[in-house]
Length: 96
Image (cartoon, rainbow, N blue to C red; front, side, top):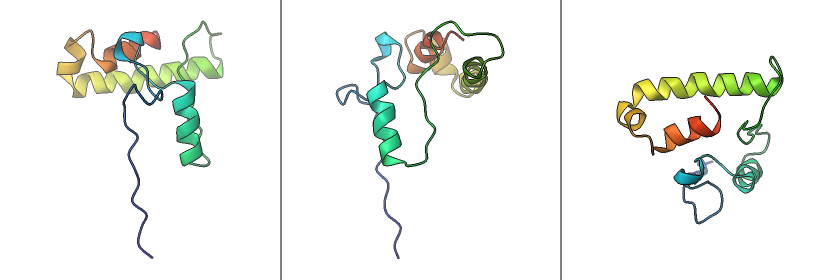
């Protein structure tokens, strides 16, 4: 049986699935819901933006995201230098 061709998730703001770069980049609740509907069993969640208790699950998610996105900063120096890039804006929204 041939494999079903997956449709990539587009980062368009018009669909309502992603925030505009000026609004902090990243996915919206609607976008996360759409992704989880298309990918059953997914554990994708929205950004951790508020204050969190030290050592809590949310704090661990934030720490993990910040570590992964720091690696992206090294891999994509052009985006790392641009304060308006989606990467920098997302890190700012996550409070990295």
